[in-house]
Length: 219
Image 1 (cartoon, rainbow, N blue to C red):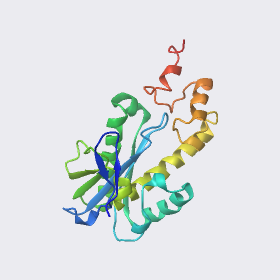
Image 2: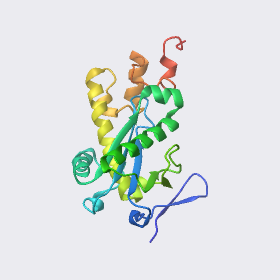
Image 3: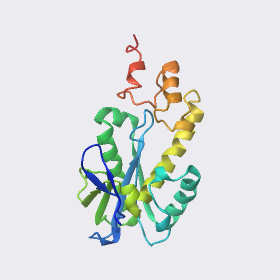
């Protein structure tokens, strides 16, 4: 039976699994980003091309997996399948906005994957409702693709684990913010730390919750 979920309007989004093998031309690639809603840190993306059915049944949206499970799956995905990882910097996020930076990171991830594969992606399945601009490949956006489509799920898991590791490192360099706990997301603890210490170089200066505490903006 097909599952579906209602959005804020009347539109219904299908949650039925997507058989990525039916897309052409090959090779079929899934791409996803992570960190879009954060107040700090880069936005990461990964692109994955599954070389076999190994791990496929274990793949789902990274947000639905425990941190422990993600940490187990990510290296297995990297070992068994082709994966490209990329990011857009905090400076790029502030310059071109987070939406465009997310798409840029996904484009870079696909190009990085193609280097590893030694060939151009045939069909790119993109998590969300938008195509990646500047990427001259056949593309299909898939809403909730990280939940419904194995290559996108694999990309989601690797991107999240990679970014989480980076934010844990930043937690050691900037201990007053607790990046190792919230990974840059707008948790109450993080927002309070910004209020007390002000933003650091990792914070997205155009974001609400950060820009109010920049020098010159505080009343």
